[in-house]
Image 1 (cartoon, rainbow, N blue to C red):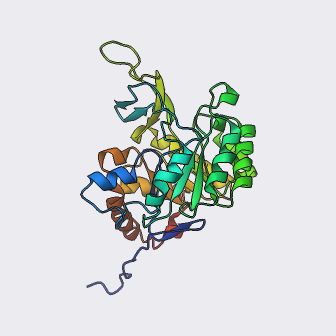
Image 2: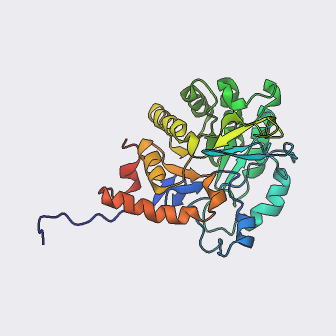
Image 3: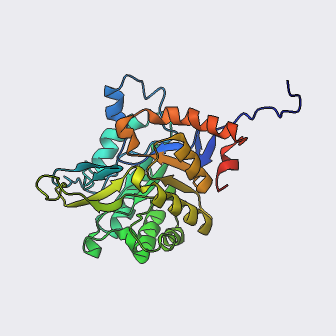
Length: 314
């Protein structure tokens, strides 16, 4: 027996994101996990043991949206193309039908909102401000915007700051701004969100892409193009987290291609305070539970005792 060996490290996964105390740093990406449907079909009681440390429902808009024409999903060699088109029931129906049930989850709820114009972000946040079921609000500014001829509001720093400022004026809740990677300088957009009053930056959303049907050689998606997610985008996301977390004095939620505990470890080391699982949940809806345990193991074998010690260590 080697008496000079240091005692093994016991790692704690507990962390926080603004007002949210998290059991571990793994949350879900909006639109990739429907807690209400999953609770009904999975052989697990999600309202007792939830796989994520916080829950982000599907993005909702001021008015209901039918979404894009099918096909809406197409698998690629290293990811998934989607062109859902923000299909949703609208924020009024979300508040009336979903929030009462989501309030029973054992984790904080981060509502996700989008707008067809800049003013919509303020209106949506105003409607959520009095809802105790919601701990934080995510602004999804990566969707097409009528004021910008169909371009994403999140590609324009002036509009990004304005939408964030309108949301900030409408709510005192913790405000997360989710950025698109389809820009030349993502730090510029992050700084615009910070100037508008963001409390946290979430990145990245999907990367523009398209695929052709191998037989017809026509676009495989009904909308022609879509957003690429999955392992293919991880290097892009990791870089974004690294540079934004160093440029701003705000916490960052990292996401993009997370499938293993090693991925979670790397995003945290790159500067993320929390990490979201997205596409991988389609294959394994309860993946986050396993990843949390494996993350602890990876920390302990490296002698890392806490999430705070790990964040930004790259």
